[in-house]
Length: 60
Image 1 (tube, rainbow, N blue to C red):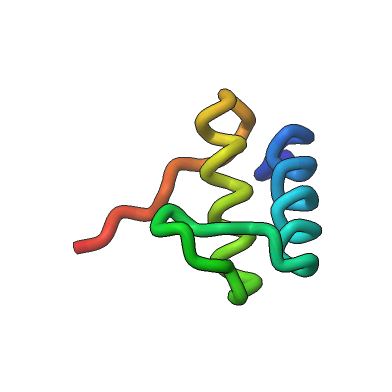
Image 2 (tube, helix red, strand yellow):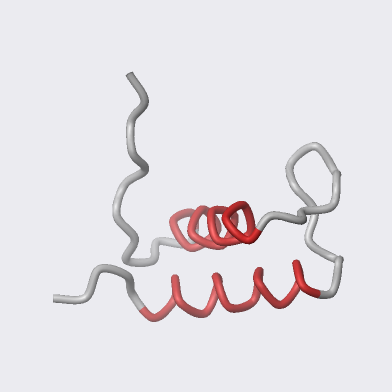
């Protein structure tokens, strides 16, 4: 069983491309430099569009 859907994969691919070229911005408007942050942004965007992505982990 696949964990992530096709839309999530496309979104993460797109955000990683933007991060590499320095055009990806975080919510505060700063440039994203972390690979992990770029992936998180891609998954978040896919979630908003209704893609097959697991729910975020809850913090204690």
